[in-house]
Amino acid sequence: MTNNYYSITNLSASQLSKLIKRKKISPVEVLSSHLKLIDKINPSINAIVKLGVSAAFKSAKVAESDIMKGKWLSPLHGIPIGIKDITETKGLTTTYGSSLYKTNIPKEDAEVVARLRKSGAIILCKTNTPEFAAGATTNNQLFGLTRNPWDTRFTPAGSSGGSAAAVASGMLPLAHGTDYGGSIRVPAAFCGLVGIRPTPGLIPNYPMPLPWDPGQVHGPLARTAEDAAMMLDAMVGESSFSPISMKPPWKSCQSYVMKMSSVKGVKIAYIADMAGIGFEEEMEKVCRKTVFDLKKEEAKVSEIKFDISYGRKAYLTMRAEWMVGQQLERINQIEKFGKNLANNVQTGLALTALQMAEAQKVRNEIWHKFRFLFEKFDFIITPCAPVSPFSADLGFISEINGKKLDTYIDWIANTYLITMVSLPAASVPAGKNSSGLPIGLQVIGRRFSEPELLGVCKIIQKISDIGRL
Image (tube, helix red, strand yellow):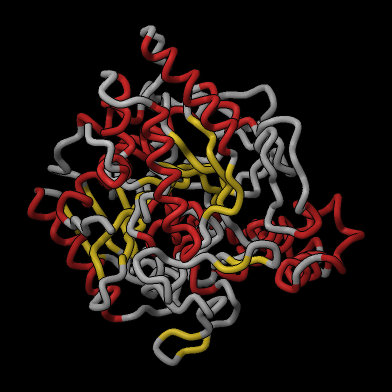
């Protein structure tokens, strides 16, 4: 291998893993190369908000020594990764994007971080997020605005926008994110990545508040479906700390994805607008072409009408209740919250029990609609977002094709309606718009179908190759 750091940072995580295992490149070289690129690129993107350089080098040297002795832990061994700054990392500042925690250094790792360390991954940094992940773009009072590496005039979306921008730019091979309404999927779509929201319970949430909550989940952001599967394998599994945690019904997601080579006979339903909010024509045209190109791969693709727009109100009720639960221990400091977070919490505090019960009734109805749909189809595909990446100066989209949206998060309804029914879903690049910005598809599967779901993403990437920055 050359010592040119671009030649190293241009490699996928899977490619790096193979070279590290074969002792063709060392974890220290990989780490050094990514740090050089971070130094060059991060000032203009602002994706990485805290580096743990000395600890990362220490871990990389240990990994190098172990691998040279034949002690290879997993495909993540020696790979530097970033952790979204709402997830606790021992010894590394974790702010949750809030000024209340600007000097907070956790004494223990979140369970998911501990698992990644155990796999041999090098925890290098924290990535930017809106305050307590309460936003679909990435900005906060502590660290400011994160920009899209494809064009810094545009947003990478949120709330895992820092992780998405870091991976898309090559500063990290992989990064961790969390997803409640689309916070992994939409940034992946805007940055040309694969990001997956797994079935709730597969990845332990400890120490997040609301341990029985199926809403907010951890997941990977990666350049390829195989990379996402590789990281997912290290994150999943039962934990005594998490009451809804479970073992996956598959041995290795990565192995399945590596072997998958065809979607022949796979039944796919394409839905252009299930949320009733409309879409940009150019964006939808790109998505439609890519989905129907799967027919050339011998998939069975059908376009269907599927309207669950009435679920938007129910989701907003559930989200408002969730916001109160997430912030309960800080509720007496609400005046110190940023405006967006404070407004979300206030909305939750005004809810009634009847509103919450009605939301659950709607949730149940929509779940059964999907259950019936999955009796006919193997996968459902939609545009991940109804719009292409928009200006970084906008906090959200307020209208689509001249039609006003009801709330500031309605534009991510395609993703949050999937959250509501606890189905796994992944974002995968569909192509680019006329400005050269990525557009993403959302691929939705049955519960615990993550290997097959990412396998479909692998085939989609093959037919819609958008290249690299």
